[in-house]
Length: 363
Image (tube, rainbow, N blue to C red):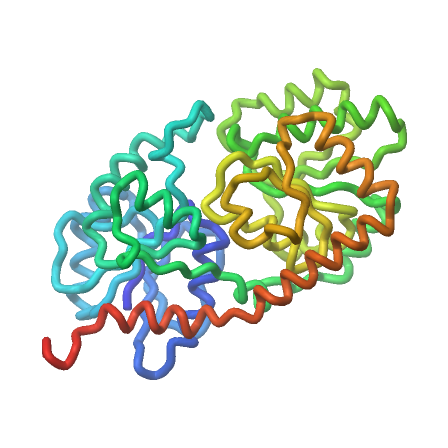
């Protein structure tokens, strides 16, 4: 197998790649890994580092040459890297979400228009589509008319059993810095993450409690043009909201351990990795009702209309003041997270790949 560029898919890609060595001796796995990528490539597979300087040229001409050279039977494209020219290999496209094709007033990234064009062109060309949630599967069918039989759901739940390794020194430093705890939100700072809703709730809470715990906002500064930071200052929350920027997994695990609870007000997700992380780590969590989060978190976390400042603020307040209530939600999260970790991504991945192999009658 060969794989395309993983740019833009983050943890989902890294978790799927962790399972490639588990496919067994029947599969030879070759991963084409971007030379500039910050993430470490997966262990246990062949790695070929590539420099896709001109992305479109590389996707449509260089990638097919690599596939032909290694005589790949199946190509898993991580991101919108599906060449127009089909070649002989059967092609899978991993679709993280349908955001660029959704009709929404939320401003998307500068790449959204190009991604939308690529999705219209590439998704129908793929032999199979891999998604994380039933939500994205339904949107594929509704927006592009992709038949359900062409879609495989491969949520990377059990990948987290391998992913999290907290470093004790980091955890101790965070506990020392925030001895009374804090609330945590994780995600790129961009409009659809809806951080403004959490800031509004924080402002409401600070009016009621001068000692309310701080909010840690862990995420890369993306395409909100500084709106979130400006709102923080305008609401008088400069001393109560901490912007950490991007945090590597080992350090982020320390923040998870110290958090009183997790909040995501994101209005649209294809999966919602941070909320799943909260469940697996047994953290009380709040999320925006009616999103893809419902697929795996329903009943294990508080589903709210997060744009309702009072409702969100009251839920955060109760998690802080009512320890017994918080521990009840922690137990629900831990129970659900443990159940999800029992899934077998390796087996599902093998089955999905084998459906693409030539049958005996074809050979």
